[in-house]
Image: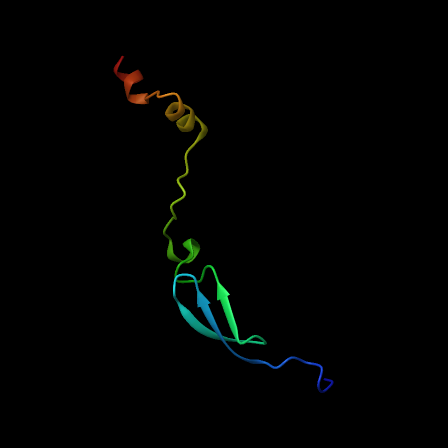
Length: 73
């Protein structure tokens, strides 16, 4: 390897938006990330605030239709 052309490799403090901190090796002194293994849904198994609804449910909610009323009639 040529001398003097490679960036310095150092310990880097990584800070997540959830508050978790850890160290890795990088050429930057600090990194700020949005999701880590402590808060990402893939690793935690907890779904976020995003509600998954189908097209029929959205239509029924939009026009005030209720499936229970149709069954009772």
